[in-house]
Length: 53
Image 1 (tube, helix red, strand yellow):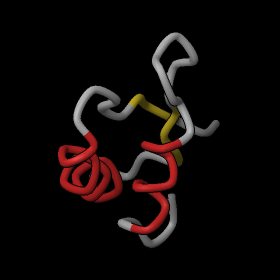
Image 2 (cartoon, helix red, strand yellow):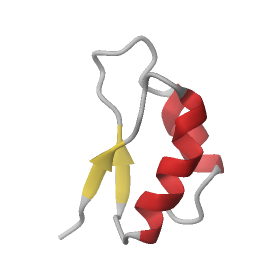
Image 3 (cartoon, helix red, strand yellow):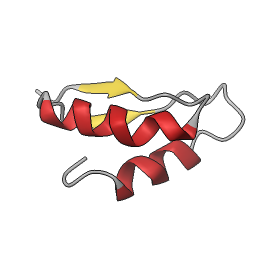
Image 4 (tube, helix red, strand yellow):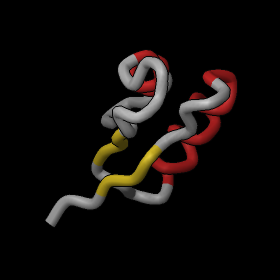
């Protein structure tokens, strides 16, 4: 089973720290919700600030 969680979407400055904490806790991935302005930008920030998410 793979476990994912959401990341902050309101403030992109929070994403790097959140992603590093999520990765350290052993989560398999992160997701965003499509009800925000741009759901893909936080995922891009997450990708460049993590090793395996």
